[in-house]
Length: 103
Image 1 (spheres, rainbow, N blue to C red):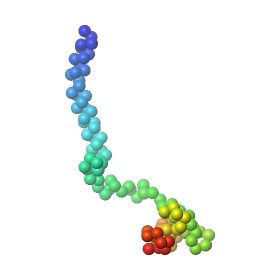
Image 2 (image 1 turned 90 degrees about the vertical axis):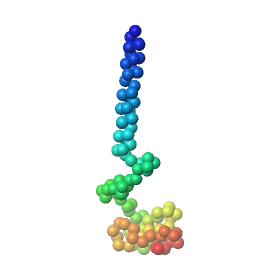
Image 3 (image 1 turned 60 degrees about the horizontal axis):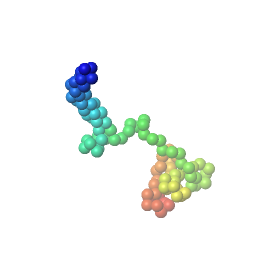
Image 4 (image 1 turned 30 degrees about the vertical axis):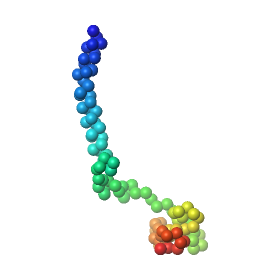
């Protein structure tokens, strides 16, 4: 008899458990919208905060022979393709067409 009571109780709780699970699922999806779900993200959600923005790595190539690295090899081919002309640590001139010269 004990097992019949447990089975009846489980059958009575099933709709409540399903409802709670569905509610949690919807709440979790609403908290983190995705494009796959058809929810557009706002610009604030797409771009991280300024504090969280990744730092530009230090230049690693000395193109003018002054002993200070002033260029980056973004493509990994050993040739510089981004240059820091004002020594602020950020690329100023870029070579996006691959000819080895700033565009």
